[in-house]
Length: 373
Image (cartoon, rainbow, N blue to C red):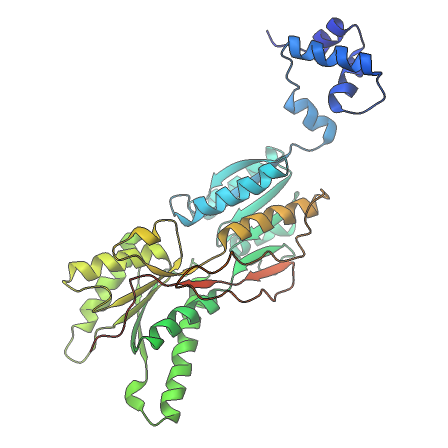
């Protein structure tokens, strides 16, 4: 049978109001009374009702977290960062997987509000667009991670995707590569065009340099392969590029930039299946720096997002909107720890605090090397 606050009051010889004040740490109970109440609570193994405390405080100390696809290894890293930061502030997390499904997204938003979460952190890439109407009238504070709000006044934090594409392409250009391929997911991946635009910017700058130097043979070119943002999608997209590069009037790309690490790993599989070697024949760069990118064969060169910093900032931004004490999220988080060997430095964030664009970094491993021949 569950012990109630009335049981504690009878054991201690006080009123239920006194027990409530002592356990809440408020009021002016005499030291002897306080000790009797605490002793009684321990002896009876009393556990205060979370529901009752929530009703008194009008807060559940719970945050909802919605992610696009929990099977994508990028998201567990983000979930861990959010949960660690939330627990440090006394919050629990309700995790939901949207599965990139608009109907499921809409249902989860409503369900979490019905569960009386104090705030919502949404890391589902198209929610800012697909659920714009809901976000504009959200009944609880909302923060978006890795997605932009679409004309809605909601705090957000994303990576500098265009800068990541440029970093990847500039690294490969410096290795002498001029024939590029990009593995592009479907339009629902809203950050993919920005990453591709960054690659194009770097290639355009290299082309301008080659023209000014009179060496048009060094002008880079780019072909695009299409597939879902998965290992299988990357393998299919890479196979497509290899098939197109085998045509008599075509040239096989020697440098591949993938939308994410999963597509890059798929590219490694397709290149190996074609009897080619990475990086001797083709170099590959991913994006995200998921936990196992260092354990592929060869280890994957990739663009590193400051995922942990995103999670911490999101919790701080929710806490700020709830009026809770803590670090002011108006200060963008540090982009990352000190650069690791083979990793370029991260520039400082420069965006306004409400919609932060976080710098990215290049982590060089053995999937990239000098252009062949």
